[in-house]
Length: 303
Ligand code: 13P
Ligand code: SF4
Image (cartoon, rainbow, N blue to C red; front, side):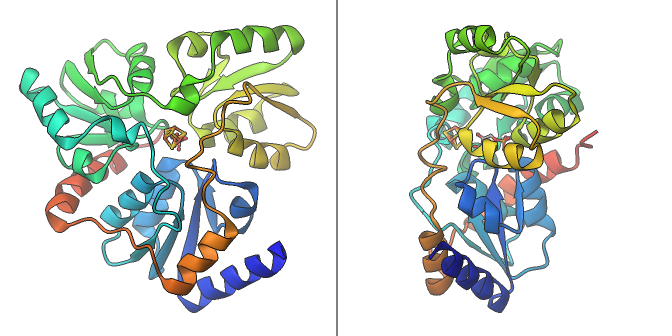
């Protein structure tokens, strides 16, 4: 059944000259048929460079919006329009404009987990993979950082700049508590704890390594350790286990499931490809300034 669905999806993708991009948190079967799986940064870069006519974005709304901003000549489908991101919803463009007015002249660094409207009133975007490099790329001593207070505080640990944080957070990562880690470390004393910077600072303080989701694949592959406690959304386990058959991965909490990232099914993808809906697009008045903030981020060297 799944096999037939997968085949139909791949055939339609070929017919429509499409590419299927999937975030590292997607369901296993969606990751399995994707052309590219990756973190927010890698998927934005792929959307910007693909020569396909159609991008089927399996992720959440802000990611499909970023693809539509970067590739306006392509059709971008988001199979589940209701796949949002509660963190992105924690700030509006009007709220950011008012926050900027409280700190005149201070540049705004906005995590890509934000709406196109918010990006449009920001100076530069960042992802969890490049946030420190983005902050360092700015000559200014003061920074407004939105919307993720946890990522902001993590970056601030490595910077001498003064930060003004927005009080947003990821409800999924916030559910992971320091207690979960101390208990698991007793159970798995040899394991390394690797977590995403969206985790609470009390959790991040216990980590052996902090990185984006794609950063976790690299770290766990290169590490000589055999056991890892994983502090991010459980979808990441699919590739971690497949790429490292001799290693053990333990999710840091059963609560690390993002309901939005789990919405998209193979049936949804097939329906989207059949009907060519729902399309995500961004009006030019928003797209152009939002693209400026994304392009500025993409110009910051990764290493
Ligand atoms: P990456 O920044 O690793 O893509 O994942 C963060 C996330 O929560 C995406 O929603
Ligand atoms: Fe948003 Fe968190 Fe889900 Fe990522 S994991 S989409 S930040 S709610």
